[in-house]
Length: 601
Image 1 (tube, rainbow, N blue to C red):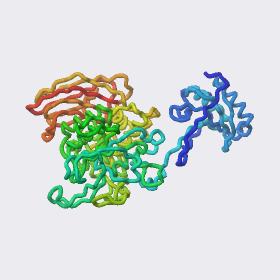
Image 2: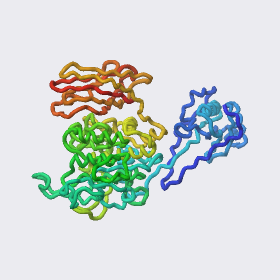
Image 3: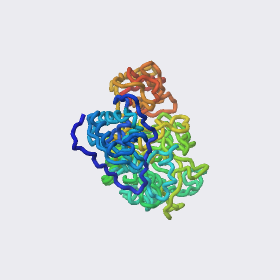
Image 4: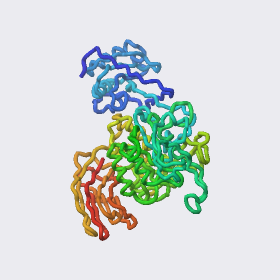
């Protein structure tokens, strides 16, 4: 116990912001008790000024008949007596407008010390309540004029809970590469744009009169009827990359337009999509360059990105070429976020949605259901707001845009829908996380986003990963102010050969030191070499023998290898024990092996 009489509470200052200060009122009253309460009976919340921070002051309400309710001298004497009993030095500070007494306990007390003092007051029949003098923080509500329309950031039902993350981080110090259609000038975004590159090598696709160059300006991706394929209608320019970039890092608190999720971050626009789309080869070079790799003929990147957003995709499973580029980017420390796709189909048949080492994002509507167009499946890692504009435009995602039908015209804002809109929500979250904790690896970022997600309030047939991303909870977790980083990992690196068209093999991992059941979003990372992965059936076997299908055989899945992270609801299983990865080759002529696998709790 502390006995010094000289300590006083530290002054904790909170920088003023333009937003109102919201104070959560105490709704429960601590009632008087007939006998002293043991310290263990005092809830943590009754001894803390903020989660994990012991209180330095208490607010004590006395019953109306008590002398301490009216007399400051009596309240001061009572504080001294309570302090002596608890072995602390208490100091009556002042009478609040409500009539309660404010009591200072000094600084550097442990939660146990505070709980001892609280127990002394709670044991006094003349005390109506005793609560900590809690710390409140400013909740930043941006002054951007269109912010009230950005339901995807703040609405309780299916918003991503972004404002609560801004109290911890804004993305400062992080560059996000937006690999997309490039950037068209916009005053609500320009201050956060840094140099990028135009990676389109085909002049026809580029539509800007040349091939690769250092100017990622978007000239428009409009097409005439039948220009891309027979029967295609004419399309106006999408300004897609600018819309995506605005969701990530639109300038915020500037009295205009929209707010960006990571508005302290910078965006490097990398142009890979033009007329009729873009080629894998250009996208691969953009991934490499964005993450700090070398691309022949392209100057070194002065704005290496710690996060890549790819709101793009095409049919077919992830190719070895694309996977290699992604693996190299991740190994350089860059988190890669991709859209799951908009075909209302299993994302395993689309790239880069099905690539390993990415965060694959499905879209949720304003009610928290999987959006009708969104892809789904076991390769999806997380869901985020993507909106639906088919019935009500305002249920889409509002961001920066341009009014030009072909070339650039006046800047504006508009609602879009798509997994293209969902992915930048997660890319923005990744930037906030990296800003809050620069030491985070891509694997830790992915794990923390999943671990700290919340259940979709609606439905998702087919699977939407771990749930709906929650920015506030996730950023608080990685900054050390609460939540879970989901970083406890158990790994097997013992290689096991998979017999061709033979019996199933099993690779064990023994989990120990855990308490209770496994999580509802258990992460199962798999690294399997195989020359025709469609032959493989992969299951997770729990300690009690229960099986969870991770991958089924498919005659149409002809790609090599299974390098993926699966999310399993294992909340009914005891965590400790021997878990197994079971793999069986169900067809002839191809062989492989399990290189390694891991469980992340």
